[in-house]
Length: 405
Image 1: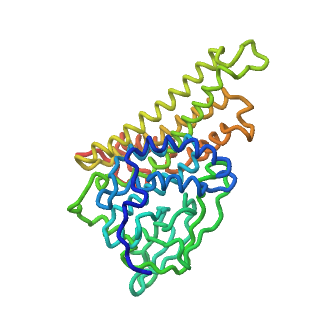
Image 2: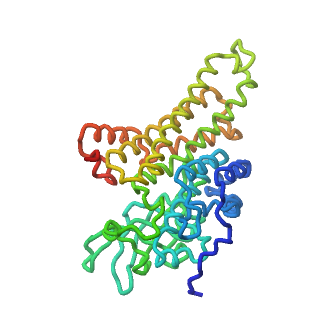
Image 3: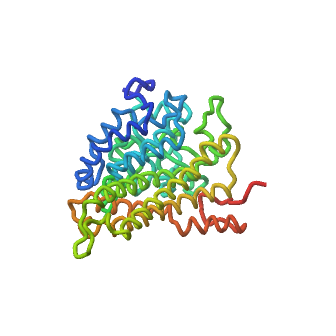
Protein backbone atom coordinates (compact mmCIF):
# COMPACT_ATOMS: atom_id res chain seq x y z
CA UNK A 1 0.00 0.00 0.00
CA UNK A 2 2.88 2.37 0.71
CA UNK A 3 4.95 1.50 -2.36
CA UNK A 4 5.98 4.47 -4.48
CA UNK A 5 4.49 4.23 -7.94
CA UNK A 6 6.23 5.77 -10.96
CA UNK A 7 4.47 8.67 -12.62
CA UNK A 8 2.32 7.23 -15.41
CA UNK A 9 2.09 9.87 -18.11
CA UNK A 10 -0.35 7.70 -20.03
CA UNK A 11 -2.97 8.64 -17.43
CA UNK A 12 -4.47 11.91 -18.66
CA UNK A 13 -1.37 12.98 -20.56
CA UNK A 14 -0.74 16.75 -20.65
CA UNK A 15 -2.61 18.64 -23.36
CA UNK A 16 -0.38 19.62 -26.30
CA UNK A 17 -2.45 22.78 -26.96
CA UNK A 18 -3.75 23.86 -23.54
CA UNK A 19 -5.18 27.20 -24.71
CA UNK A 20 -7.14 25.61 -27.55
CA UNK A 21 -8.31 22.81 -25.27
CA UNK A 22 -9.44 25.33 -22.65
CA UNK A 23 -11.55 27.18 -25.20
CA UNK A 24 -13.48 24.02 -26.00
CA UNK A 25 -14.36 23.63 -22.31
CA UNK A 26 -15.77 27.17 -21.86
CA UNK A 27 -19.41 26.18 -22.66
CA UNK A 28 -19.24 23.36 -20.09
CA UNK A 29 -17.84 25.63 -17.38
CA UNK A 30 -20.43 28.31 -18.20
CA UNK A 31 -23.24 25.74 -17.91
CA UNK A 32 -21.93 24.60 -14.52
CA UNK A 33 -21.09 28.09 -13.21
CA UNK A 34 -24.38 28.73 -11.41
CA UNK A 35 -24.21 25.39 -9.60
CA UNK A 36 -20.54 25.92 -8.74
CA UNK A 37 -21.36 29.30 -7.22
CA UNK A 38 -24.26 27.89 -5.22
CA UNK A 39 -22.18 24.99 -3.91
CA UNK A 40 -19.17 27.27 -3.31
CA UNK A 41 -16.76 24.96 -5.11
CA UNK A 42 -15.82 24.02 -8.65
CA UNK A 43 -18.08 21.20 -9.78
CA UNK A 44 -16.73 17.67 -9.83
CA UNK A 45 -17.78 17.45 -13.48
CA UNK A 46 -15.71 20.49 -14.38
CA UNK A 47 -12.62 19.24 -12.55
CA UNK A 48 -12.97 15.83 -14.17
CA UNK A 49 -13.27 17.46 -17.60
CA UNK A 50 -10.09 19.47 -16.94
CA UNK A 51 -8.35 16.29 -15.82
CA UNK A 52 -9.58 14.25 -18.80
CA UNK A 53 -8.36 16.98 -21.15
CA UNK A 54 -4.88 16.79 -19.63
CA UNK A 55 -4.97 20.36 -18.35
CA UNK A 56 -4.21 19.49 -14.73
CA UNK A 57 -0.80 18.26 -15.94
CA UNK A 58 -0.10 21.09 -18.32
CA UNK A 59 2.59 22.67 -16.12
CA UNK A 60 4.44 19.46 -15.28
CA UNK A 61 8.19 19.71 -15.64
CA UNK A 62 9.82 17.91 -18.54
CA UNK A 63 11.80 15.72 -16.17
CA UNK A 64 8.47 14.49 -14.77
CA UNK A 65 7.07 13.66 -18.20
CA UNK A 66 5.42 17.05 -18.70
CA UNK A 67 5.52 19.43 -21.68
CA UNK A 68 7.49 22.22 -19.99
CA UNK A 69 5.13 24.94 -21.19
CA UNK A 70 6.02 28.60 -20.91
CA UNK A 71 4.35 30.71 -18.25
CA UNK A 72 2.38 32.67 -20.86
CA UNK A 73 0.68 29.42 -21.90
CA UNK A 74 -0.59 28.95 -18.36
CA UNK A 75 -1.80 32.55 -18.15
CA UNK A 76 -3.67 32.28 -21.46
CA UNK A 77 -5.16 28.90 -20.54
CA UNK A 78 -6.52 30.08 -17.20
CA UNK A 79 -7.86 33.26 -18.81
CA UNK A 80 -9.64 31.19 -21.47
CA UNK A 81 -11.29 28.96 -18.83
CA UNK A 82 -12.40 32.02 -16.87
CA UNK A 83 -14.63 33.05 -19.75
CA UNK A 84 -16.86 30.20 -18.60
CA UNK A 85 -16.40 30.40 -14.82
CA UNK A 86 -13.79 32.65 -13.16
CA UNK A 87 -14.04 30.85 -9.81
CA UNK A 88 -13.35 27.45 -11.35
CA UNK A 89 -10.51 28.94 -13.40
CA UNK A 90 -9.06 30.55 -10.25
CA UNK A 91 -8.98 27.20 -8.45
CA UNK A 92 -7.61 25.40 -11.51
CA UNK A 93 -4.89 28.00 -12.06
CA UNK A 94 -3.53 27.60 -8.54
CA UNK A 95 -3.90 23.82 -8.49
CA UNK A 96 -2.18 23.30 -11.83
CA UNK A 97 0.55 25.83 -11.03
CA UNK A 98 1.40 24.42 -7.60
CA UNK A 99 1.19 20.82 -8.82
CA UNK A 100 3.53 21.74 -11.66
CA UNK A 101 5.98 23.12 -9.11
CA UNK A 102 5.78 19.86 -7.14
CA UNK A 103 6.57 17.91 -10.29
CA UNK A 104 9.77 19.93 -10.71
CA UNK A 105 11.08 19.08 -7.24
CA UNK A 106 13.77 16.44 -6.58
CA UNK A 107 12.63 12.79 -6.85
CA UNK A 108 12.80 12.30 -3.06
CA UNK A 109 9.90 14.78 -2.84
CA UNK A 110 8.15 14.24 -6.16
CA UNK A 111 7.90 10.46 -5.80
CA UNK A 112 6.24 10.79 -2.38
CA UNK A 113 3.73 13.46 -3.41
CA UNK A 114 2.91 12.49 -7.00
CA UNK A 115 2.65 8.75 -6.58
CA UNK A 116 0.50 8.25 -9.69
CA UNK A 117 1.00 11.63 -11.34
CA UNK A 118 -2.69 12.48 -11.09
CA UNK A 119 -2.57 14.05 -7.63
CA UNK A 120 -3.28 17.76 -7.19
CA UNK A 121 -1.51 20.13 -4.78
CA UNK A 122 -2.91 23.32 -3.28
CA UNK A 123 -0.89 25.95 -1.43
CA UNK A 124 -1.17 28.82 1.02
CA UNK A 125 2.25 30.44 1.12
CA UNK A 126 1.93 32.58 4.25
CA UNK A 127 4.11 31.24 7.10
CA UNK A 128 1.27 31.08 9.60
CA UNK A 129 1.85 27.47 10.68
CA UNK A 130 4.65 25.94 12.75
CA UNK A 131 6.87 22.90 12.23
CA UNK A 132 8.39 21.44 15.40
CA UNK A 133 11.23 18.88 15.00
CA UNK A 134 10.68 15.29 16.14
CA UNK A 135 12.37 12.00 15.25
CA UNK A 136 12.17 11.50 11.52
CA UNK A 137 10.51 14.78 10.70
CA UNK A 138 8.32 17.54 12.08
CA UNK A 139 5.00 18.02 13.80
CA UNK A 140 3.04 20.69 11.96
CA UNK A 141 0.25 22.84 13.36
CA UNK A 142 -1.61 25.67 11.72
CA UNK A 143 -4.72 27.08 10.10
CA UNK A 144 -4.39 28.38 6.54
CA UNK A 145 -7.25 30.30 5.00
CA UNK A 146 -8.03 30.91 1.34
CA UNK A 147 -6.77 27.54 0.11
CA UNK A 148 -8.34 27.82 -3.34
CA UNK A 149 -9.18 24.44 -4.85
CA UNK A 150 -8.45 22.51 -1.65
CA UNK A 151 -11.63 20.44 -1.96
CA UNK A 152 -10.20 18.86 -5.11
CA UNK A 153 -6.60 18.50 -3.89
CA UNK A 154 -4.65 15.61 -2.41
CA UNK A 155 -1.91 17.69 -0.76
CA UNK A 156 -1.45 21.16 0.69
CA UNK A 157 1.95 22.85 0.42
CA UNK A 158 1.63 25.44 3.17
CA UNK A 159 3.93 27.99 4.73
CA UNK A 160 5.41 27.28 8.15
CA UNK A 161 7.81 28.77 10.67
CA UNK A 162 10.37 26.11 11.53
CA UNK A 163 11.11 25.88 15.25
CA UNK A 164 13.98 24.41 17.21
CA UNK A 165 13.64 22.02 20.14
CA UNK A 166 12.88 24.93 22.48
CA UNK A 167 10.07 26.21 20.29
CA UNK A 168 12.03 29.18 18.94
CA UNK A 169 11.81 30.03 15.20
CA UNK A 170 15.05 29.24 13.37
CA UNK A 171 13.90 29.14 9.74
CA UNK A 172 10.83 29.27 7.51
CA UNK A 173 9.59 27.24 4.59
CA UNK A 174 6.83 24.96 3.37
CA UNK A 175 5.37 21.65 4.51
CA UNK A 176 3.53 19.08 2.39
CA UNK A 177 0.36 18.05 4.23
CA UNK A 178 -1.75 15.08 3.04
CA UNK A 179 -5.33 16.32 2.93
CA UNK A 180 -6.63 12.80 3.52
CA UNK A 181 -4.49 12.44 6.63
CA UNK A 182 -6.07 11.99 10.08
CA UNK A 183 -4.53 15.18 11.46
CA UNK A 184 -5.37 17.47 8.53
CA UNK A 185 -8.86 18.74 7.77
CA UNK A 186 -10.66 21.29 5.61
CA UNK A 187 -12.97 23.73 7.37
CA UNK A 188 -15.90 25.18 5.42
CA UNK A 189 -15.20 28.90 5.73
CA UNK A 190 -15.60 30.25 2.17
CA UNK A 191 -18.63 32.57 2.24
CA UNK A 192 -18.04 35.54 -0.08
CA UNK A 193 -19.77 37.83 -2.58
CA UNK A 194 -17.65 36.59 -5.49
CA UNK A 195 -15.32 33.84 -6.68
CA UNK A 196 -17.53 31.43 -4.75
CA UNK A 197 -16.62 28.57 -7.10
CA UNK A 198 -12.96 28.78 -6.09
CA UNK A 199 -13.78 26.89 -2.88
CA UNK A 200 -11.10 28.82 -0.98
CA UNK A 201 -11.69 27.15 2.37
CA UNK A 202 -9.35 26.74 5.35
CA UNK A 203 -6.84 23.91 5.78
CA UNK A 204 -6.18 23.00 9.42
CA UNK A 205 -3.37 20.79 10.77
CA UNK A 206 -3.24 19.58 14.36
CA UNK A 207 -0.15 17.64 15.44
CA UNK A 208 0.34 16.41 11.87
CA UNK A 209 3.55 14.43 11.37
CA UNK A 210 5.47 15.36 8.22
CA UNK A 211 8.63 13.41 7.28
CA UNK A 212 11.81 15.45 6.92
CA UNK A 213 12.00 15.38 3.07
CA UNK A 214 8.53 16.95 2.83
CA UNK A 215 9.48 20.07 4.80
CA UNK A 216 11.23 22.59 2.55
CA UNK A 217 13.49 25.01 4.41
CA UNK A 218 14.13 28.44 2.90
CA UNK A 219 17.75 28.31 4.04
CA UNK A 220 18.30 25.07 2.10
CA UNK A 221 16.44 26.34 -0.95
CA UNK A 222 18.57 29.48 -1.09
CA UNK A 223 21.72 27.42 -0.91
CA UNK A 224 20.72 24.90 -3.57
CA UNK A 225 22.53 24.69 -6.86
CA UNK A 226 20.95 24.25 -10.33
CA UNK A 227 20.27 20.67 -11.28
CA UNK A 228 21.97 18.94 -14.16
CA UNK A 229 18.58 18.63 -15.88
CA UNK A 230 17.68 22.29 -15.35
CA UNK A 231 14.88 23.53 -17.61
CA UNK A 232 13.28 26.95 -18.28
CA UNK A 233 10.82 26.82 -15.37
CA UNK A 234 13.75 26.43 -12.96
CA UNK A 235 14.83 29.97 -13.90
CA UNK A 236 11.48 31.56 -13.10
CA UNK A 237 11.81 34.03 -10.20
CA UNK A 238 9.41 33.02 -7.45
CA UNK A 239 8.24 36.50 -6.37
CA UNK A 240 6.03 37.40 -9.40
CA UNK A 241 4.44 33.97 -9.92
CA UNK A 242 1.56 34.27 -7.47
CA UNK A 243 0.40 37.76 -8.57
CA UNK A 244 0.36 36.57 -12.19
CA UNK A 245 -1.49 33.41 -11.18
CA UNK A 246 -4.41 35.22 -9.56
CA UNK A 247 -4.47 37.88 -12.27
CA UNK A 248 -5.02 35.34 -15.07
CA UNK A 249 -8.68 34.45 -14.34
CA UNK A 250 -9.56 38.13 -14.03
CA UNK A 251 -8.43 38.68 -17.62
CA UNK A 252 -10.91 36.06 -18.79
CA UNK A 253 -13.72 37.40 -16.59
CA UNK A 254 -13.38 40.88 -18.11
CA UNK A 255 -13.20 39.45 -21.63
CA UNK A 256 -16.39 37.44 -21.04
CA UNK A 257 -18.18 40.58 -19.86
CA UNK A 258 -17.01 42.48 -22.94
CA UNK A 259 -18.29 39.73 -25.22
CA UNK A 260 -21.72 39.58 -23.57
CA UNK A 261 -22.21 43.37 -23.57
CA UNK A 262 -20.99 43.63 -27.16
CA UNK A 263 -23.42 40.97 -28.29
CA UNK A 264 -26.38 42.78 -26.69
CA UNK A 265 -25.52 46.37 -27.70
CA UNK A 266 -27.29 46.21 -31.10
CA UNK A 267 -30.32 44.52 -29.52
CA UNK A 268 -30.86 46.15 -26.15
CA UNK A 269 -33.32 49.08 -26.10
CA UNK A 270 -32.61 52.30 -24.19
CA UNK A 271 -35.87 52.80 -22.34
CA UNK A 272 -36.87 56.48 -22.20
CA UNK A 273 -34.13 57.63 -24.59
CA UNK A 274 -34.40 58.43 -28.29
CA UNK A 275 -32.31 55.51 -29.59
CA UNK A 276 -33.51 52.36 -31.30
CA UNK A 277 -30.92 50.38 -29.36
CA UNK A 278 -27.76 50.94 -27.33
CA UNK A 279 -25.51 50.68 -30.40
CA UNK A 280 -27.16 53.83 -31.81
CA UNK A 281 -25.80 55.85 -28.87
CA UNK A 282 -22.27 57.07 -29.47
CA UNK A 283 -21.88 57.44 -25.71
CA UNK A 284 -22.46 53.71 -25.20
CA UNK A 285 -20.29 52.87 -28.21
CA UNK A 286 -17.47 55.06 -26.92
CA UNK A 287 -17.67 53.57 -23.43
CA UNK A 288 -17.63 50.08 -24.92
CA UNK A 289 -14.47 50.96 -26.84
CA UNK A 290 -12.93 52.40 -23.67
CA UNK A 291 -13.61 49.15 -21.81
CA UNK A 292 -12.03 47.14 -24.63
CA UNK A 293 -8.92 49.34 -24.47
CA UNK A 294 -8.67 48.88 -20.71
CA UNK A 295 -8.71 45.11 -21.17
CA UNK A 296 -6.16 45.41 -24.00
CA UNK A 297 -3.99 47.54 -21.73
CA UNK A 298 -4.15 44.91 -19.00
CA UNK A 299 -3.01 42.22 -21.45
CA UNK A 300 -0.14 44.43 -22.65
CA UNK A 301 1.15 44.84 -19.10
CA UNK A 302 0.71 41.14 -18.37
CA UNK A 303 2.57 40.13 -21.52
CA UNK A 304 5.42 42.49 -20.68
CA UNK A 305 5.61 41.00 -17.17
CA UNK A 306 5.46 37.39 -18.35
CA UNK A 307 7.98 38.12 -21.11
CA UNK A 308 10.51 39.07 -18.46
CA UNK A 309 10.07 35.59 -16.97
CA UNK A 310 9.77 33.51 -20.13
CA UNK A 311 12.49 35.32 -22.05
CA UNK A 312 14.78 37.61 -20.04
CA UNK A 313 15.03 35.36 -16.97
CA UNK A 314 16.23 32.55 -19.25
CA UNK A 315 19.39 34.51 -20.04
CA UNK A 316 20.17 36.17 -16.70
CA UNK A 317 18.86 36.78 -13.19
CA UNK A 318 16.25 39.50 -12.92
CA UNK A 319 17.11 42.46 -10.73
CA UNK A 320 14.95 43.52 -7.81
CA UNK A 321 14.06 46.63 -9.81
CA UNK A 322 12.73 44.48 -12.67
CA UNK A 323 10.73 42.33 -10.27
CA UNK A 324 9.24 45.48 -8.77
CA UNK A 325 8.12 46.55 -12.24
CA UNK A 326 6.50 43.14 -12.79
CA UNK A 327 4.56 43.60 -9.54
CA UNK A 328 3.53 47.09 -10.66
CA UNK A 329 2.47 45.75 -14.07
CA UNK A 330 0.23 43.23 -12.32
CA UNK A 331 -1.32 45.77 -9.98
CA UNK A 332 -1.94 48.25 -12.80
CA UNK A 333 -3.43 45.55 -15.04
CA UNK A 334 -5.84 44.58 -12.29
CA UNK A 335 -7.07 48.14 -11.90
CA UNK A 336 -7.67 48.36 -15.66
CA UNK A 337 -9.72 45.17 -15.58
CA UNK A 338 -11.82 46.36 -12.66
CA UNK A 339 -12.46 49.69 -14.39
CA UNK A 340 -13.50 47.85 -17.54
CA UNK A 341 -15.90 45.72 -15.53
CA UNK A 342 -17.53 48.75 -13.92
CA UNK A 343 -17.82 50.50 -17.28
CA UNK A 344 -19.45 47.45 -18.89
CA UNK A 345 -22.01 47.13 -16.09
CA UNK A 346 -22.96 50.79 -16.56
CA UNK A 347 -23.57 50.09 -20.24
CA UNK A 348 -25.55 46.92 -19.53
CA UNK A 349 -27.78 48.71 -17.06
CA UNK A 350 -29.93 47.46 -14.16
CA UNK A 351 -30.98 44.28 -15.99
CA UNK A 352 -27.39 43.05 -15.73
CA UNK A 353 -27.81 42.79 -11.95
CA UNK A 354 -30.65 40.28 -12.17
CA UNK A 355 -29.70 36.98 -10.57
CA UNK A 356 -30.46 35.26 -13.88
CA UNK A 357 -27.82 37.34 -15.70
CA UNK A 358 -24.31 35.84 -16.04
CA UNK A 359 -22.97 39.40 -16.09
CA UNK A 360 -23.63 39.96 -12.41
CA UNK A 361 -21.72 36.80 -11.49
CA UNK A 362 -18.77 37.74 -13.70
CA UNK A 363 -18.82 41.27 -12.25
CA UNK A 364 -18.83 39.99 -8.66
CA UNK A 365 -16.03 37.53 -9.41
CA UNK A 366 -13.98 40.30 -10.99
CA UNK A 367 -14.73 42.71 -8.16
CA UNK A 368 -13.63 40.25 -5.47
CA UNK A 369 -10.64 38.73 -7.29
CA UNK A 370 -9.23 42.08 -8.34
CA UNK A 371 -8.93 43.10 -4.70
CA UNK A 372 -6.51 40.36 -3.70
CA UNK A 373 -3.76 41.88 -1.58
CA UNK A 374 -1.11 40.40 -3.90
CA UNK A 375 -2.49 42.72 -6.60
CA UNK A 376 -3.14 45.90 -4.63
CA UNK A 377 -2.73 48.59 -7.26
CA UNK A 378 -1.77 51.43 -4.94
CA UNK A 379 0.83 49.44 -2.98
CA UNK A 380 2.24 47.96 -6.20
CA UNK A 381 2.58 51.43 -7.71
CA UNK A 382 4.27 52.62 -4.52
CA UNK A 383 6.71 49.71 -4.79
CA UNK A 384 7.66 50.73 -8.33
CA UNK A 385 7.95 54.38 -7.33
CA UNK A 386 10.26 53.36 -4.49
CA UNK A 387 12.37 51.34 -6.92
CA UNK A 388 12.63 54.29 -9.31
CA UNK A 389 13.64 56.63 -6.47
CA UNK A 390 16.09 54.23 -4.84
CA UNK A 391 13.98 53.94 -1.67
CA UNK A 392 13.57 50.78 0.44
CA UNK A 393 11.01 48.18 -0.60
CA UNK A 394 7.53 48.03 0.93
CA UNK A 395 7.02 44.37 -0.13
CA UNK A 396 8.12 41.69 2.34
CA UNK A 397 8.65 39.09 -0.38
CA UNK A 398 10.90 41.42 -2.34
CA UNK A 399 13.27 43.20 0.06
CA UNK A 400 15.79 44.25 -2.62
CA UNK A 401 14.37 46.45 -5.41
CA UNK A 402 17.61 47.93 -6.64
CA UNK A 403 18.51 48.01 -10.32
CA UNK A 404 21.31 45.75 -11.55
CA UNK A 405 24.77 47.22 -11.09
